[in-house]
Amino acid sequence: MNWRDYWNQDTPIYSGERHKLLHYRGVANDIIDLIPFSEAAILDYGCGEALFADRVAARCGHLYLSDAAPLVRGRLEERLGSNAKVSILAPEEVSALPDGALDVIIVNSLLQYLSLEELRTLLGLWRDKLSAQGRLVIADVVPPHLSPVTDARALLSFAWTGGFLKSAVVGLGRTAFSDYRRLRGAIGLSQYDEAEMLDILRAAGFHAERAPVNLGHNQARMTFFASPGPLVALTQTSRPCGPESSTA
Ligand SMILES: C[S@@+](CC[C@H](N)C(=O)[O-])C[C@H]1O[C@@H](n2cnc3c(N)ncnc32)[C@H](O)[C@@H]1O
Image (cartoon, rainbow, N blue to C red; front, top):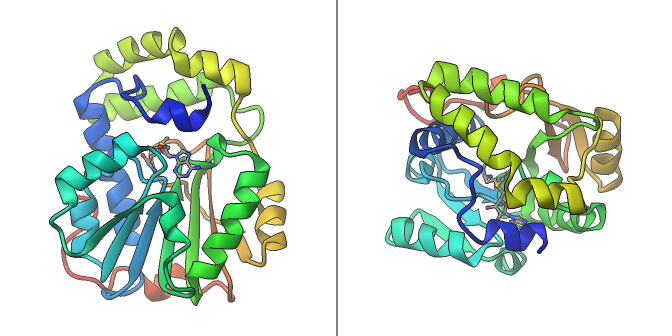
């Protein structure tokens, strides 16, 4: 089994429905904060179940969701297939989008499952599809030597504030004996430090910087902003889409 196959099934990654809902709600809120203007075309690449994608779509011009797992895309189609502001794409279909068509590409919690070669290929694709001022957001990058204990601590803290501590503790025990742990031991996760990520992004033709905070709950992991053109400060472009607080 490889990581692509692993994600094409129900996994024990979320300790329960509440964990999953809070995770996807937080990611959707973070994406909303990154929408530069109300007509922006957004791609969430490796989107997973994207449970709050309808909220993101309501705040931008068009939302493209792409995931390698047919199971995931089938579920997205069921939930969002009738939403005219959402398109669900297989990874191969992303290359058919016109060059320069996208304003923001979000890639959250995917890099650890890609080889360096796959990452470099995808960076070329994402660069082609972004507008000159477009922004690539690569989030939840796992630094080398990040111990599973640090990840577990971050999860337990998230669970404590989110009210699912008991199920998180049970879930951690379950994950320790799962296919995830076995696969991680067998093929590993791709991990990069800040300097390596910046080098890889710049070698792919991006202007790049590390973001001050990571998307999601785990601040031991990293987010990077990259753009084919000079990076525009987010404070100049974010939150013009409407009055609703994205932290709801
Ligand atoms: C850890 S989940 C992250 C989901 C979502 N981005 C989030 O933040 O919750 C990784 C997702 O990436 C997808 N994936 C794995 N390899 C991929 C690839 N090469 N291209 C596109 N999606 C991929 C998996 O199917 C899975 O849904």
